[in-house]
Image 1 (tube, rainbow, N blue to C red):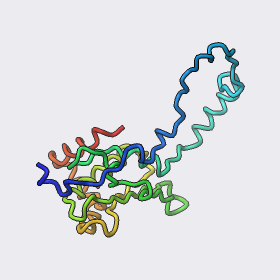
Image 2 (cartoon, helix red, strand yellow):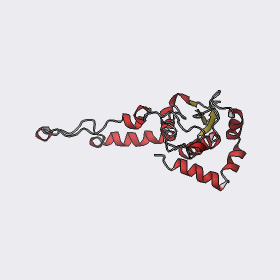
Image 3 (cartoon, helix red, strand yellow):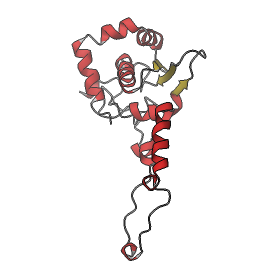
Image 4 (cartoon, rainbow, N blue to C red):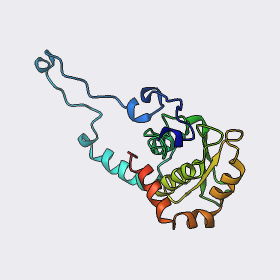
Length: 196
C-alpha cells in the first residue's frame, strides 16, 4: 500500500503549531475554590443592560458586511484531508497562511474580491495535485459569500505539472466537467468530510 503513494514519508507539522484563530479565543476560566465567596457584580458593558446599544448594533450589522481575512480562509481549508494520507492539508504544509491572499475589487464599481490560494504539493511529482486543488476550490466556493472569486493555483516551482494544473483549475468549464465525474466527486467529498 505504501509503495502506491507519491510521498510515502511526508513532513508532518504538529497541529498545535498551525496558525488558527479558533485556538486563540479565550478559554473559559476554571472556577477556583474561592470564586464562590466573591460577590458577582453585573457588568456595565453588558449589551442587555442598555436598550440603545442593542438597537444600534442591529442597525449597523445590516449596513456592514462581514470582512473575511486570510486567517479565516486558512481555517476553512487547513482541515481538508489529503486524498493520499490520513492527515489534513494544513498539517502536511500543502496550504499555508502565508500563501493566501485576498485581493480587493479591481475597479471601484465592482464588489467582487479575489481569494488567491497557492498550494504546495508534498512532492514535485505529486499525481493528486489537481484533486487537491479542486477540493480547496470547492470548499471555498461553497463556504465563502458570492462576492468572492476563488483562484487556486499551484505554487511556482513546487510541481512539474504546475502549468497544466493551474490551467485546469482556472478554467470554469473544466472544473464543472470534473465535478460531473462521480468518482472524482466522491474523492472530493471524502476530503471535505473532515472540514470543521
